[in-house]
Image 1: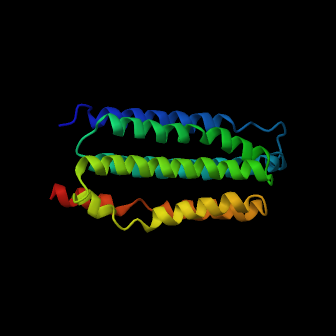
Image 2: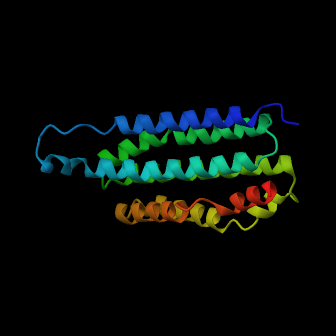
Image 3: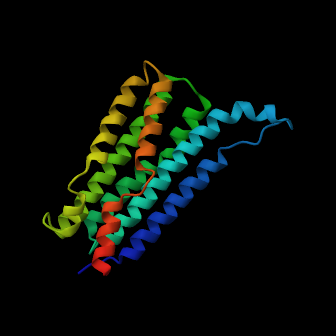
Length: 197
């Protein structure tokens, strides 16, 4: 039996992600001019914000489904969840740095490092939940074909290295991973619907 209510962990995580998004949007500065041309220098900042917003939305959506499918929460899951939230909390910093230094290698690479670490942290959280339910559980069977997870990790590694050769290609890889996950993970959704029937 769970000692920690799932709803408490989910509400806490939702609140942290909402604060992260709020911090990011506060980094969008109002231009000094009144013409549309005054917005042009802000485009890299806006696009980095948009991409990060999509990534946070993806994590929020998949995190919700994963916790909904979890039967119980324990201390290990709580720490794994905090580990994920730590890396997500760095997204506003790297978003601002890459937006303000469009075309620079290190901001682009660090953006990828934070995304990679968040993906690893999510995998750890998922594995902690699976450990509590058993490797032969329905959730484990639903998640056994994790090709998107593997492709995402490989893409982040590639983008980090490529950042020192071509920042544009790195950005394209980040957009590719976001597009890959834009549609929520239906494996868990199907599992939850099956159990509810």
